[in-house]
Image (cartoon, rainbow, N blue to C red; front, side, top):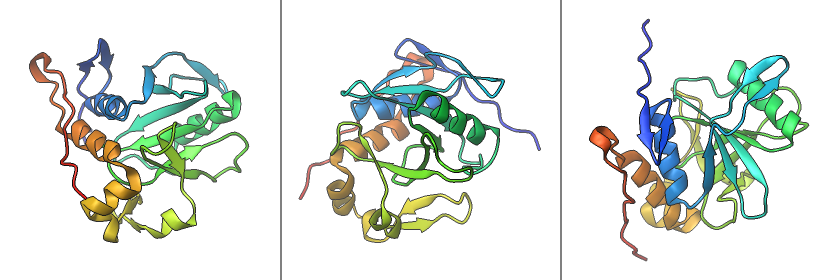
Length: 198
């Protein structure tokens, strides 16, 4: 099977290796998360590794992000081993973002996790980092996507009001803006303003 080739995309002076990475950059911008794109490479267990993003938080902490297509395994593979190794080596969390921005849980690796273990995080605009580690309550709010294995927020969380209350209008705007972004012909993505209803 022939894999489609990623489309290099220009945004904010960066040349992203894929349109998907550029969409996540738009998401981070709208959510007001400071980021650097491919700022520094590492050697993880003898393998060169260049994480896609470094998120810069207000308290001088940072989080690395690796972006992959929705068809990539979230639990196994070289990308998971590298993310786990980077977390162990640097002490910074590493979030694996598979697919386009949406309301769901994403795998996160932190220093010292057992082999095969991970944490799950979701984005919100209620905290300085703009993401939180999911606890049992948040897992209960998700449904398993049979195609990808992703934990997607379902049920009542699908209503705009519940999603806005749980994650914040900023997250909904960031998702809508990232999905609506057009990069053709030098266009610059703009923030999508969702109505502010109660």
